[in-house]
Length: 424
Image (cartoon, rainbow, N blue to C red; front, side, top):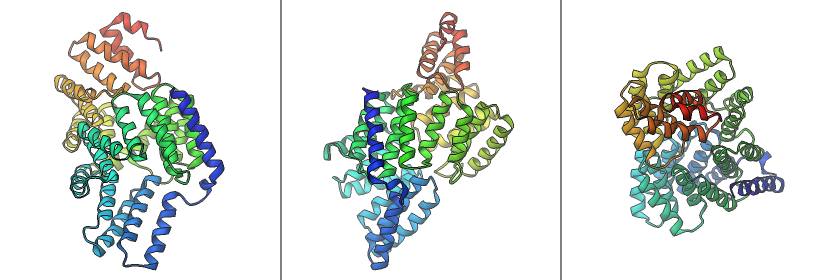
């Protein structure tokens, strides 16, 4: 079922490209920026035009991964509020911008306020879903996503959010079905949205062990939206799974040409290490640390990557834990809980690590890294059976992770016969 849906999606993407010819024109966000700027020239006293410009600039930030567009969006939105204080459309754009800047707690608060003002607005429920997911409030996120689909069944935003929640719950099949439905609901002119959905389907296919299908989807995404940063990052993961480490390095270099982020520098450093380019990896890790530490106190940061760097590469477990505690105060989603648990593990605080790892696993997320961490922690607490179960799950879910050898080594210690049996 997954493969059939993916192939249909690939064909649909190729059809969209061949029939629209939009890939060579302005991006969807650039078109909207131009339209809003023209509207402002015609009527500079119209608040909606500035609100539209702010939204288009925020969308351009997603297209390019350049956060500078959010500052420009804030400027446009300020003019909208000057002309029309309390403007509902402008308030929604402000929440969108807050989410883009990772200011999730404030985004949730403002989304709740405008939800009370307009309780049947589907987009606002989408904001509530996003903010609650990022903060780790999954029951509230599910409730908001369900409202979206109840108010307007089959709406695009509701489908993509439902898909992400299903992925977090460990239901990759269900997530892929919803993403395919979302693709079918996306207008052909929205090439970045189409490329994003194709990339998400590729991510799900890779997580399910179907690297070749993931590759085809990503090539289609890059045909629709050339040099799309999300697609390049995911294609680099595919190349890693295929043991084509130099190609992964080249893809990440390409991704980082225009608007590099600390997270992408960290991915590049790891790819260089896998490719045996140790000196370049050392330099790139240094660049990552320098840029990531500058952002540590900001909402949009690479703190989780810093935690793993200091725990696994930088050999500074105390610093890993300090940063993990900072981020834990901001958000308690499954990925932050995992990073916090691993920092506690690196500091020998195994019982505390297990407590937070159990919380990370409680939602059902099937992530090989989570299972490896859970197994390593359980092994330190002399819970051999539990450790073996987690480690086997990690090994079964992925054949290409960096920690695979470590997982096998621990499994051989806690369950020698099972460790010897794992050859994949």
